[in-house]
Length: 268
Image (cartoon, rainbow, N blue to C red):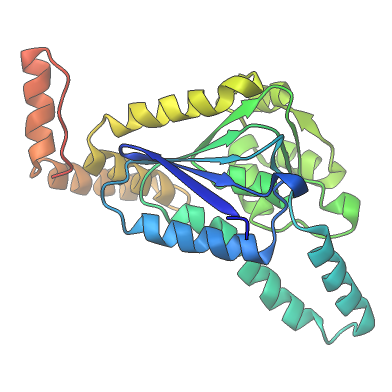
């Protein structure tokens, strides 16, 4: 049986690969459960300092599996007004399988090596930032296939590009290429597809070279700004800095600056 999620590791950096290239890494429940289980294990790995997510083959992910979508449409049409609660609960659970990547305490980078459509694009939006292949086609095509956006699309997109541009993309379901995604701020870097994974892994290695306690605290701080006031955030930052000043990494980082050398962080 094909391993739907493939993992590779280089020191403190893990790369996860959607691994169903024959089907353009379409998102099935089996893949989602494998992904959730893999993320759950990594979330408990204190040695992990950064994660890269990419796709095998020519796509990052073509989105939700069409057969699954057809089954839900058939169920809804066969029992309108009654089946929707079961469908709602199943879809909500399905979202969380893939959006479990948001639960990782370390930074995450989407290496969008090829097309990322619908729910596949949403998973990339759930990462902390994105490197995108210039030729990749990206789109949230939900309304084009007759369904409301899912997988956090209406939450993530406005926070990245603003409400007006998010509305345009979600209403029209139009496709973007990597270059336009970069101009919008959806991609941190836009590169040839052959360079995407290596560049994302390079960025992950840069992150991994920094103090892991401080980096994880920054991730918690950035996450809570989604609902925090500036005063609340200032207090949070002061608390996290106070904790970091108790760590050996803080002493090591300051000593490295004084001694003009690279720091050797241990996560303690």
